[in-house]
Length: 167
Image 1 (spheres, one colour):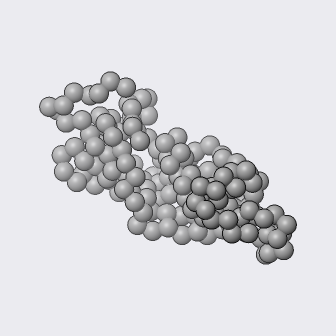
Image 2 (cartoon, rainbow, N blue to C red):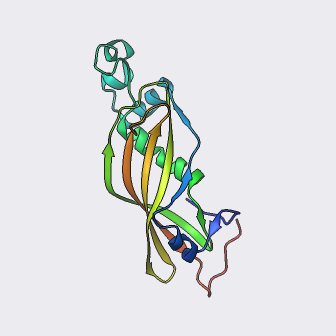
């Protein structure tokens, strides 16, 4: 993901002051059957609980549910929307997860959103910063979330000797 500076761009020092804070919440995203079917096609995971409403209705879920990995994959768009940008960032990447737990199924037709708590800011070396997010995907109208994850992003910053690329 390319991160451009905007009104929400924060310095690394400012980000450090936000550790432990809830720093962003995304919009709601509809998880309809069409999205679930498209994800099943891309991943070749056509288990009936996801793509067969008639047979899925006979399960304890009462209908089709989203793949856990579909819900997890939406963290990318949710994070782009809700997480603050870093001043001087020229590139950000998904560095991985330390922990992921799927806590509740997302039924077809429900909406989800991401909530992000900044857990850690780690300057790896000059120009490289890791941010650890405690990410939660909430289900609209439900008290229990769909998932919780410790998500690591790495950012490469423009160093003094480099020029900021035009965006």
